[in-house]
Length: 148
Image 1 (cartoon, rainbow, N blue to C red):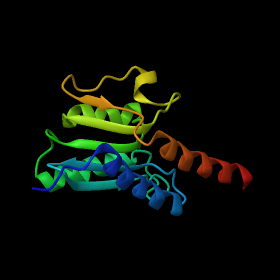
Image 2: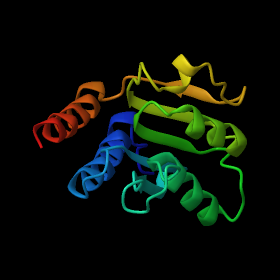
Image 3: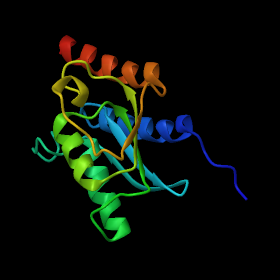
Image 4: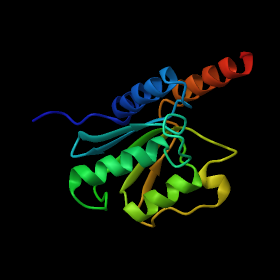
């Protein structure tokens, strides 16, 4: 039997999605959804590409995950996302009934915790996984933007 992967392994996969967003000149946030130790959905920010304020990495992954599973609920799934979800994404995650959310960098301004948004009561949250790497790509992106 294969050994289960750990949080860092899947967060690195989310960071790969964030890098894709970075290369597309999107805010570099990436997400993957995992069930039974398998990635079933990926997403990265596409708000600029799609001119859609709702096209966050989490929303892309939620849609792909629900499509893969053939239903709207993401029970027994874990979302790995490089940045703490905003209140919009936290609301969608609430309705999806996702089991676990693992995020890298905190968002002290726009994150769901600071905004007072609640997750589903059965959702478990793990934070600060590869926090430095997740913060670093965001800092680099915004430093580049300020120089333009």
